[in-house]
Image 1: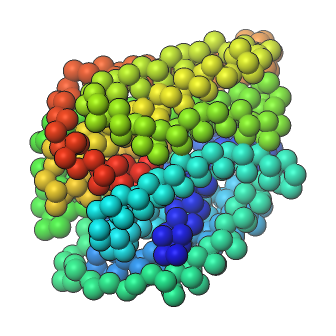
Image 2 (image 1 turned 135 degrees about the horizontal axis):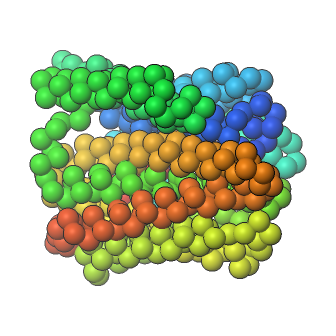
Image 3 (image 1 turned 120 degrees about the horizontal axis):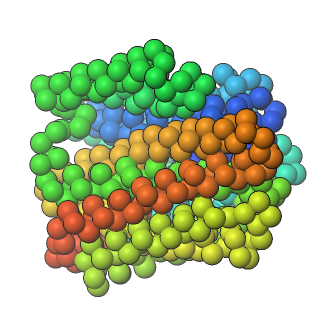
Length: 478
């Protein structure tokens, strides 16, 4: 029963990461978002989620994982209510930012609670399998549920559906989840590190998203980028001196961990662009309803869900980490490249489904090896931290990649409209340009993985059940 509670809490977070994409055009129309500013509905959530994953885990160590889990669920639920009641752009984005913080805390402590609940290796492996299935199934359910709720009711209900679930999870968690002894008493939190790195990324994304309107060489854009770089330098200085750093820099001397984080940033940028831009292409260019968009994403999400149940882990155990990772990234790059040629009058069977299938296979194959690469050459007592670092790279890479590609698409569309191109043709051309860049992200990630990654299959084979559980959790976070 406690596992069900943890899975329901995880399901809320996973649903929110995919359910929003289908409703973005409806939000754009109702609240008057521009194409570039619409990215903040996604980025506002992603930046606080990624920025506070590591801090959320440290808070759990200090104040108790159950307490933080319940607090995170409560905060996420209240923010969902605010999102569902939003009638302005500012309210919606602000509530999404709070949602991201609550989601980060829940994701960071869920694995610790599960490890404390299931002590036997066999039971723990089974629990992790269920947890991973919920994570993958939640992605598929989110896309479909987002389409249904937006079509039948309106986009507000994609957030309001979290409220009764969150209330039930909080009530039941108080009865079923055990209170554990705090192990981190007396340690200091690296709040300064969390604040500086999150602020740096927010400033950078804001500069990129608004670069088209303000001008890429304007004082605003260059000033924001300079401020972001300054904050990033401050963050590195803090991490090199603080007693309990949010992100110990010494870990990046480990080759596979450093490579996995670079690959994760590029890969996440391409993947988040896929979800965001393809949903807009289907609705704004092909005229799909939100429900049709949800059904269009279903094949890819089902394939990714199947791989999360263990197929990818078996591939890693058979071939090591390098070959599946490179193969998955290459498959996904082909899927993105096919989207880069999708025409204005495209057909689902010929112009959408092949891309979705390739992206589903590519993502399903590549996710586990990235995370196993990050943890394979790290000491056991640092494995949780390594997982948190690579998850943070995924979230930040997705936010920055989405901001860059959304801005590129908007710039290309604006240029063609000014030249007299039709609305649909201009939109389609903008998406094509962004998909080409996303394809290059995925290809560069495959190249870096193929050249830099050190294949070390033995740790994966020795600790396959535990690693598979960590991968399932990391996919939930990412």
